[in-house]
Image 1: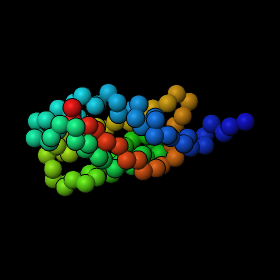
Image 2: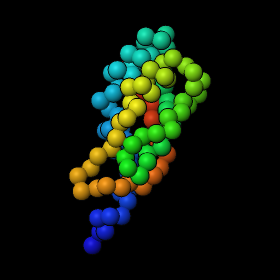
Image 3: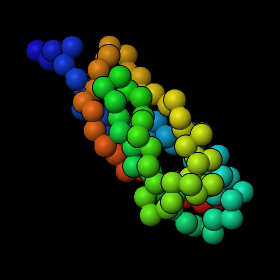
Image 4: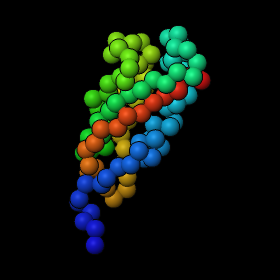
Length: 100
């Protein structure tokens, strides 16, 4: 029997599903700030045990990059929620938004 209080492992697919609704707006961030089309804007983030995404850092970009900051403003406060689950295994994830 699985312990319901044990932390839940989170997969890349779950993070992808969590952030998918932000793809179009993130692409607009890139366009607004002159990022070439088809460029990937990578973000490294930490999933906290309560499901919040924190420690958002750019991959291959400067932290002051306006397109990166725009995306951070979009996804700040995003939280993974699963019925019956209150804690998650804390882990780092890399995620990329494509400028379309």
